[in-house]
Image 1 (cartoon, rainbow, N blue to C red):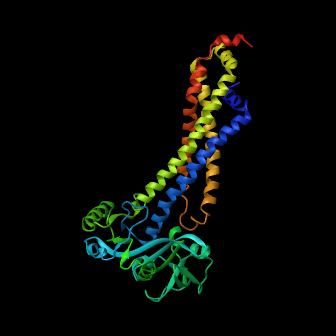
Image 2: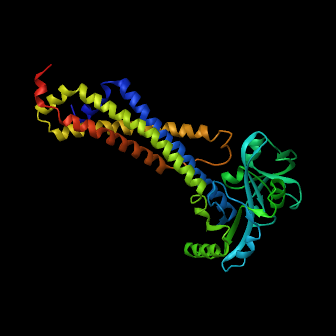
Image 3: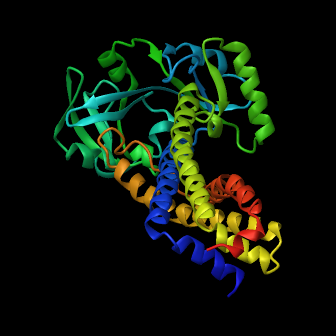
Length: 371
């Protein structure tokens, strides 16, 4: 019998208890995959949307708030002529309940600016001008709202005609209701207010140049904060809160798994005292007994991690179809998150097995003479 056979036999001794322990670990790992995948997906989705618009710097005001605070539109005039600024676009973004959708992204964009250029019409047309009471729906938004060209969409108290359905090239863009900025300002009562300024820099500017330009902008606009587009969401207060809550919830679930593995391995050690004593009497060193228990708990963690990853992927697919999230973000389930989750599970297994392993090393070989 090999060392691995001894480890596997130890786990198979009480299959029900082992199965329940695996379930406890897998639930914790599933929480990590689902919640962290969704929070990272928020950054990935919004960053992809800005990349599709050609935005390289974003000016917004997230200070002390989970959502961006509106600020005066004339703020743009202070930075538009800075060396290195190629183009600017003022935007007002809001999250609203629209008809049968509990929460949707509504994006009011300065008429004629570059933020309209990435929208490729699937059907219909663009609004004729900024005064037309019309909207363009992203492909996902049209599907969620079940709208086609010529239908109307009610935003607050206004009914607007759907004149176009467009592919914006990114999940967030395709899940948005898009209309001219003055129209959204009028509907929401945010007259002459915006929530962001998208900035394009001159071609060829490197990352250092973009950061320097952000510093120059921040000297001129105390009511807003300029950041590279790729860091805009990740550094916001809202994302930090969401990320902290995701990890906090996941760690609580993982703690249940830790206690489960510890209990399982302790019970295993108590039930196998005579077997361990026989192994010691046959020449096994206490350190080898410790390794055996640690390998068993690590294997429990590994198997729980694999099951947890699969459960997490299924959970994410269900969560992203929830009315509150549908069309707003695409979960980030890249391989590195899967590997991180399995590594956490193995670490949990090893950590949980430390005390039981130490207890196993204290078994006296003389117990082999009993029974």
